[in-house]
Image (cartoon, rainbow, N blue to C red; front, top):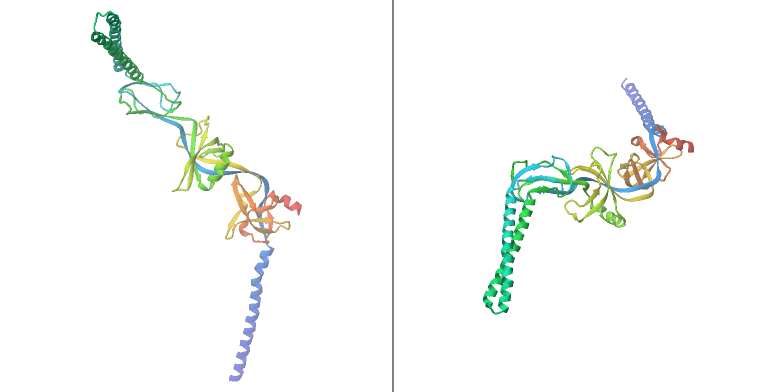
Amino acid sequence: MSKSRLKLTGCVMVLLMVALFFAGCSDKKTAGTPSASMAAMVVPVVVGKATQQDMPVQVTAIGNVEAYSTVTVKSLVDGEIQKTYFTEGQDVRKGGMLFSIDPRTYQATLRQAEANLARDQANAQYARTEAERYTQLLKSGIVSQIQYDQFTSNAQALDAAVRADQAAVENAKIQLSYCSIYAPISGRTGSLLIYPGNLVKNNDTSLVVINQVTPIYVDFSIPEKFLAQVKAHDAKGRLHVMAYPSGDSSNASSGYLSFINNAVDSNTGTIALKGTFANGDRRLWPGQFVNVTLDLTVQRNATVVPSQAVQTGERGQYVYVVKSDDTVDYRPVTVGMALQGLTVVDKGVNPGETVVTNGQLRLFPGAKVSFKNEAASGQESSS
């Protein structure tokens, strides 16, 4: 009995091993089927065409709008503000009246200086007459040399007094003119800092700030690696600058590069530039942040693809190119500037080739694709 049982058990073990062997073979066959299914799978993608066109070479930055000139208006005399001749935020013209200061003290000073001048002019005229008379008397020997010298020196002293009085009159007129404050530049006024009735001191109290906004500056900085290109192209002619106010990227203000700083900022590795804009429409405002585009040159007949086609992987940037049999080819690429949804491809793609712009995550070299857009109609007809 025991021997028969042992034989039966051995047979069962052999059958189990055979069953496991065939099951393993079946699993191996099953494990190999996904690669075959992946190869047969068709991936739907969106595609675009590589084209050839002229592309501007640009540098972009964030800029800050700065007034073309700024003047803080102050009083040059002490006194009481009598009246203002503008409203806050008003555009004023150069030479336009802004403030008046109580002039009575300075009018009185002017009258006093004019009276002193008139008095000394009369005394000087009399002294000159006496000096002329004593000149004749000296020639006739009637008066001594000492008497003659006394009258001539007195006439000269009074002439000097007249010149001093004339200077005092001029100074009094200048001080009186300072009681009327005029706009030194054309521009837009800010907040009124001193109201009528307040006392002001000479060159101490700020009255209002005027900013010239037409034309206007935009300050911006770019990485120092672009400095050589900027200098080279600027030497050939004035460079074009575009400024896009925040929230209005479709309508740019046009200007030109007017300033390159004389040193690179060693802390940031950037170079400060400045663009000048006519700003006739007043779209740019002092203190405003804008997006700035500096045009350097134009790259002629550049090969460009939709920017969505360029992907970045472990080995760098690449695109998937659709071949004539509707399979894709993995292409490493060297890219240049990107502008308005297009990227320049310096190496890796030829004009006219079809590139995948959407659906790259499911692709691999040799994958079969179908097209979800009409951009591949030319590809299908050519195949």
